[in-house]
Structures are given as C-alpha cells and as structure tokens.
Length: 255
Image (cartoon, rainbow, N blue to C red; front, side, top):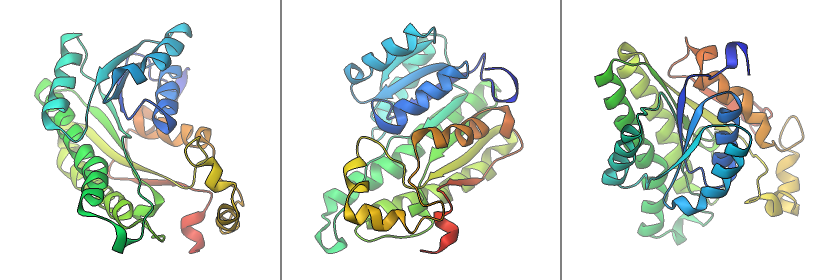
C-alpha cells in the first residue's frame, strides 16, 4: 500500500489476534506494510493466521500475551525486544463480552470483563508507552472500544462500563503522552458481523436492531479498515484523544 495509509517500516502489536476482529485487524495492518506481532494467551491459536500472512509475503510473528497479567505483558514486550522489535503501533483489541442481566452477573463475571477490556488495555498501553518514551520514539495506540461505551443496551452492564472507562482512559493517556509523541485514540465499532455474532444478528432480535441503524445494515469487518489505518498511521498524525465511531449512524440515531 502506497501513500498516506502506508505502514511500511512500522511494527504493530495486535492483542486478541486469534480470531474475529483481532485477526482481521492484523491482516489489514500487514497488507498496509507493517510487521505484525500476533498476540493471544495461546500462540497455537495464532499459527494458522501467521502462516497465512507469511504466504502473502507479510512479516508476522506470534507472542504469548495475557493482557490481564502484568508479568505476561512485560514478558511479551521482552520477547519482542529480544527479536529487535519495539512496536510503534499497538492495537488494544483483546476483549470479552457478557450478555446477562445485571442481577445475574457475578463478581467473577464482572472482574473477567472489566479486567480484560479495561485493565488489560491499561497494562498493554502503559508498557508500550514506557518503552517508547524511554527510547525517544513516537507511537500510536488504538484502543478498540465500542459504541456501547457511549450508549447503553440491556444485559451489557459490565461490558458497557468497561468500554466507557476505556474511552476515558484513551483521553487521559492522550493528554499525558502527547509530549512524548505517543498518540492514543479509540475506535468504537457498532454492530459488526463476525462469526461470533452472526446467528444473533440474523435472529428476530437482530432484525429489530438492524432497523434502528440509519444505514439499515450491520457492519462488516472491512468497514473498520479505513478508520483503523487512519488512527494507526501518519494519516492521523494530528489526532490524539479522538473517539471515532464506525457504526452506520447508530449513535446519532438515539435509538
């Protein structure tokens, strides 16, 4: 890829890269020319994607990373450093959801969602920024939030709270780290069709939701490609603390 959206010469870390949007984001960044580090708790789940990317001429590596464990995060960055890499693009994508009523949500459920979606992003972002600033290098951190961080739905209290926190964390870190040349932005997808949610989106309840979206359709992963590249690379070099929604107009509909 040439021009403003090229990531040639850049290195990117993608958390939660074993499936879904994380795997898609890794492919988009690799196609744009970045070296991509695929991260998940188990590297065996990443090997097929690594092989696919390499077959297309991309540079792809795997690293074990549990975003909820500070030692695991540090070890992952040490592994990359041992390979001569300090990623200057970080895609904080690892996340989990929970679809239960608040009164049926256990403390364990709450901790699992908030620790992964919010604490995990904090641990990865701060470790990356600490190393980038020590090396005197700029960088871009993209936190994958959600429109549910700015609106609510039923049965998503921990998820919505974690994504709202992630949006505020994005703004706070952007303010602190601008002087280091480290940009921090949030990408807020709307309802994006993936293998995980296609059955629900095709259901009666999913059809009702579709009708509340001004564009009258659910998104596809490729609808996030442009916003991702904008925030990750030089195309968005004057953007930090931004919260970018890609949702077919769902947020502005108020429905």
